[in-house]
Image 1 (tube, rainbow, N blue to C red):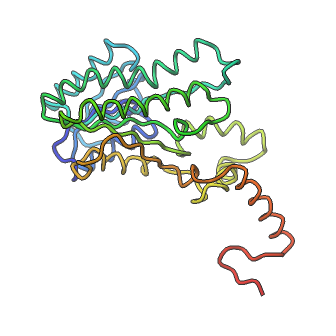
Image 2 (cartoon, helix red, strand yellow):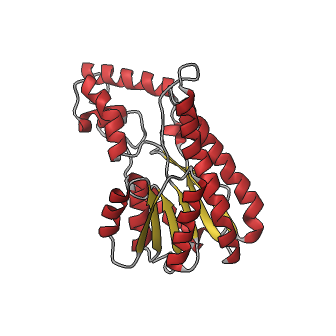
Image 3 (cartoon, rainbow, N blue to C red):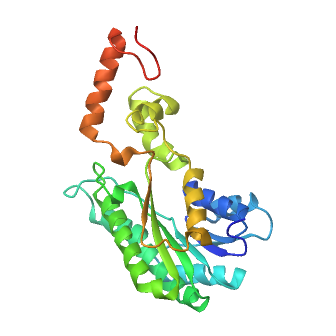
Length: 285
């Protein structure tokens, strides 16, 4: 119950990582306001949680009037606002020369302007409450480039800098601001996005995810609960001296050289097939 008595606002709280954060926060003693564009999805999450600990507010994080309503809903529900989790985000494929301007603007509106508006509306309440914790869900795509994701990666990199700027400017008010950078997390969204590629390769989802995670040191995709645990820590007083940080949660994928991993993987397959070397944990006689 590390965040017992705290009031949290979680955007994109109806699915995936956002829903997992809401569930974890409630388990740790907080009350939550979850937001998203689809009321029916928010209602489903709310019904799965105990009565009296969650309120919903549908809306679009890129619309200032919706953001104001979200923050006021959270404050009215709990009488204060202790924690803001900016989780809502979208992506649009495309390299710079190919990306439609409409897609570029929309990604920036949701992934960057949205968190800015939420922070702008929430920070005065946190100052009045004597402090708070802001957690921005960025991505490893904000630290390194992903193929054909120019808008997504740019928005997530900018969100990390916005996090650090807020940490600097509002530290004197006891407001901490940190970023969480997930790598491959297996959610319904990633299964939908990647599943079509798996179909083209003739693989089911489990086989496909296992194959594409072969170069990750932990050899798997993560679960949304592995992000929610870190968020609960950052929302709690356990992280009272932590601000301006960007936490990477990616199974170690960001420490691997793409070229080196590919070469090693190919050599490993070749030598194992030929019986030239032992597999890890085996003794070659």
